Image (tube, rainbow, N blue to C red; front, top):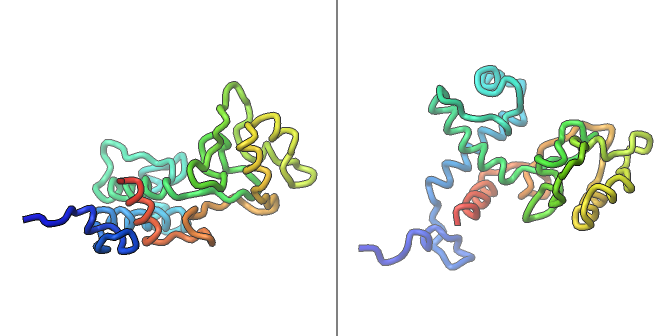
Length: 190
């Protein structure tokens, strides 16, 4: 006999639920942690072996599960899907961030530009940075993007002397946690 809905049981106590963990969502959050480790430690033995086999020509965030992928890799790929929902790129020199497809704008609903690309030839964030000053090329940004994007882009700090860094959007310090990944996945499944 079911007296209460499972979703109500797994809702946080602050939202009127009983606070039980949804094991499936928690498992996905733990798998996302493995993806985070691959992203943060690309020189580890595990990361090098997986890269050689499953994503030799790209990064872990763009990897796909091929037809002959192992059960372990297919599981990690489900965690990487969760990771992609909460990742944001912190702008350094902008050389590794794709303007139109990578999440790099600090806002809640969509971390990619809402401006349509159209026939624009710009592809990397580094092309929006003035090489002399190391700051945004404001004229180019204003000519390329809609005002909503311009405001967010110009308020984003640039560190032209550093590499771009992947960070966890749901944490002030940008550090991944299973708890916040659980929240991200739970929100996605609602």
